[in-house]
Amino acid sequence: MSDSYSSIAVNSEAAPLFQQILDHGCTLRVRVTGRSMTPFIRGGDIVTLQKTPQSDLQKGNLILFRNNRCNLVLHRIIKIEPRKGQETAIQTKGDAANFDEPVPIHRVMGKVCKIEKAVPFWGVTHIDMESVFWKGVSYLIAIVTPLNPSIREPIFLCYRGLKVVFRPFAIMRR
Image 1 (cartoon, rainbow, N blue to C red):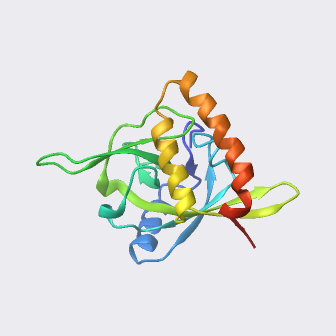
Image 2 (cartoon, rainbow, N blue to C red):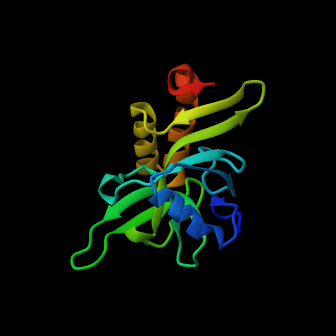
């Protein structure tokens, strides 16, 4: 798969299996490849996915979906667009990538509920994406990411500083 997306390293035959696992209410742990979600998610991080009712999807959620080429992509919801007489579309974007084509909501396979990151000299850290703190951070990133880079970069620098300050409160360590 292309490095332009944060994708899940699987062949096309595995996607239906992923869908079945999530549809049966189980969680799914997968390793992410690509760079489109840096710095929030990097290649090699492990995400835990769960099926989420369409009505519960929100701006800022990280979702796994099939794009128009049937590749599995993991990006952030920037906007949910209800359409009269048509299926709702979701506008997604990788934090370090361009906007994707709008995704019909039926192509959403699951939502990220946890991220496991290997941190040198620290071990593995677990980010609970269902916590109020990380939901807020994700929402703010969804607002800031589409902005002009000259506006966005100073905000991301502040985010990186806050991440260090709030790390003990927001990350669970096993």
